[in-house]
Length: 479
Image 1 (cartoon, rainbow, N blue to C red):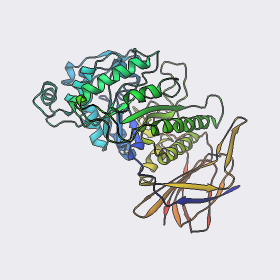
Image 2: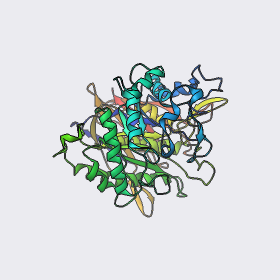
Image 3: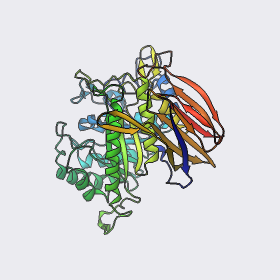
Image 4: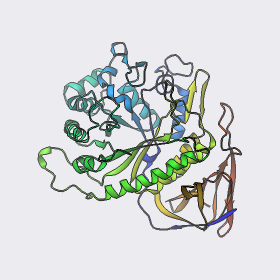
């Protein structure tokens, strides 16, 4: 058994953004229709919202939810899904197959967000849409004057504006196989600037998210050079997978994520805190704060060559440990302003729903427990001792991951043992109490009526040691 000494520096590194606990839904398969929304389910209310799913979403308490895509935004025209339901347009879903259902549109999405206490985040169609169409969407959502699209919203029964704050300027536009021509970086820059102009001239207060890329050379720096004055966030999407590497497969991806986030952080730091030489003739203000990173899609996704690309994932306990480890990174990184797990229901999701009801997958646990524990002022943790885990001949990472936050004078600690073979003895610097979550089998999965893990209360006095079991998640607070 390895032994580590836990400590932390009592110097704050900023506030942990609650936006790191965001979620994402897309018009893909049964994520929305048959997931959170189902006009035929006995579990649905009069507005066709699945109440059993809604209860679980409220437990996750996402501060933000992203919609409608994802890749489907390449064909999504918002006006097809507003107004009387019987007048809305059903179109072929050219991206994911089937029909693009319009019953759950802008108003329904915003209402859903309000029911769970989340801010809506909308993604605009750059591929087959226009800057003017995007600007009209902002007016429809946020307009307060006597103008056409604001009045159209009122005609649809919504007198008060939706006040949508967050807007994504495209989605993975660098992907050449997808619909659209913005995979050419210069085209994306040109078009994104026009979209932002139309949108911010409608509402100067909105926050915009421009597209970053994980592996396309020559994308990130040119985009930021050209657009950093106009954008509040820079997006990055990350999916890990086992990829035939066995139990520790997704942790290879985690190591890659850390390297990429470090590179992106250095790039973002190269831009000034406030824009300089910004022309007043844009007629809307530049960004007001330092541009920060938005990991607006993340999860484990094992791609399969089937009709839904392996998106109906079953998650095991290993995946829950991986998700908790990722949350520790999100908490500790000063460059990350928000994250959206993809996706909320049925499609690579923490929540599964069908005709029999709904249940939680293993990755639900860290998302829920961290959301209600790990927020506040960010502290720097330290684990002294031999903490190396070999993932194979070519890669090593720390066996135990840790994050520490402070609020109301108390410290809150999250510990994750990535080592599924060896427990760890941890000496603590303060009296701590909390809960340890662990499974006897890292490959075990939740059943509909039974969880694959156990919960054990933990308490340890200052100067004493606690045992972090192999493959365990532990959440503690000062006693």
